[in-house]
Image (cartoon, rainbow, N blue to C red):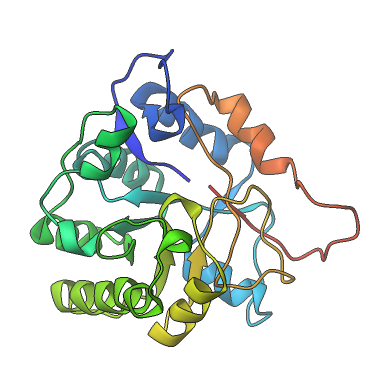
Length: 244
């Protein structure tokens, strides 16, 4: 689980999970190759966890929340250099805008990709997933109808923009409950990711997959450790994948 990639101070005072310095990101991506990790798409994760296809050893999927412009400018060239797939989650009602939802937390809103930039990302081979219409904490939303709209409408908007099915969803802030999971199923998403920190296994619902959070303090060695740490009791099924 990444958010922004760019040139940031190594020691951020707060909200470190929002940032990853570009040199560290480069080192992390190189480590994946050198350490024998296999970066796969979320489509491959879904098929593997359903038992429809074999996942390679040390399977890892890369996800980027919010679809910041710096994904296109900073992260994409590094990923393309290594031939890694990734999924970028876009806030469909705010394309070309700024991440205004971070302002109440004392952060400066940053530019989000517009429709043309998302199509460019898709043309590069990356998947574009949905991150709702307006980035709410879904578990705090009173109306079931609004939850359904946040998930269903965002899927339709992005499919119109991209001309392709949008199969993957991410719960903003990781905030979700049974209503949100049911809305994801009703909207037709294949996967939905949370902020729960663990390795994904066939025991997980594909619509509430865990991820490993990467932040500004995560070194290449730190990423390696996050990916090999299962964060589960012993005895889980062998077929598994880490989603970063």
